[in-house]
Image (cartoon, rainbow, N blue to C red; front, side, top):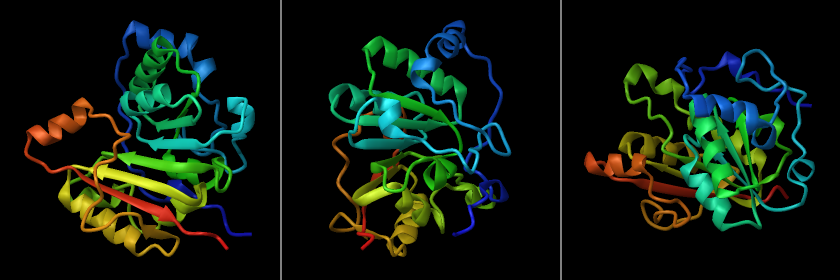
Length: 241
């Protein structure tokens, strides 16, 4: 059996900062977390996943349906929109910032969304072990932290080795969708994933067309307002056979 990756031996793609949440956000964790937030067994840190922990999607969602996973869901705007418009699919949001998780739960509850679950955890650990192999129809990574300073680029989520982790979680033919407003990160993403043997491009030309299933958020508008081009990529998981 291959050795289980120990992701705390690598730099994570985030830095957790303590911050005060509003009273409504605090209440969300008490009132709504049982419905939306998965109780993940921990490993070495508060955002880690125990190596033996496993998710049973059919038991958690109460059905068998295609599962769509968003990494770094922020305040949940994109995934709530998708879950609302596609009740026949199941959605999983992975985020480490509690205020974002709280806002997502509040907005999901207000919209009556029931096909959404949240995980407060380091995303590579979720993909590498917590999700069953081949469980995800798609994995979305929209506007991850670019860590634009040279000394910090080692923290970027999409770097050498990430493709293998994402490929494990995706079903054969499943899609890995990415978007960023930082050109050098887009180039790095493309270089990394072009070199991954488990993926092939699912787009023609230099960049993919904008994903129609991604709503325009304030974050994306901000990047456009600053004159940065939005670049999309989409890769297909090759057959395991």
